[in-house]
Image (cartoon, rainbow, N blue to C red; front, side, top):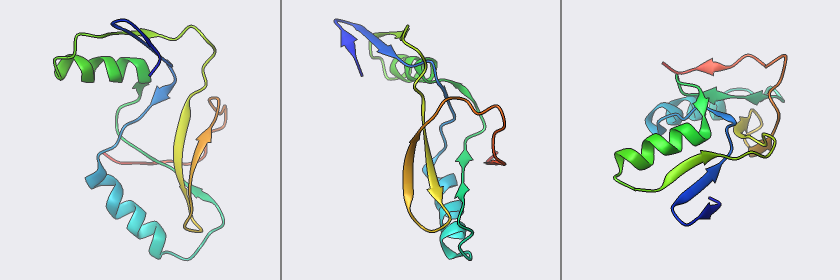
Length: 105
């Protein structure tokens, strides 16, 4: 986290956090399925700018640091699990034609 004093500068890229308890059964399902030579993306139910999610977390944790939106162009990252069993961290811009996503309620 780039910071200057009590100010943390973070990307406003959209982020959809998901609980580990929700991820585990989906990863197990994908790992046991027949390989599809593709990527399965999973995400939590709430989509919000990363800087806002971190700001809410720091406030809830009693951390006094201020989170500000990084003025540089969005370089958001997304984590994916491929259907051949490998994991990847993808750097991507928003896709105008996003693939089907399995959204966990």
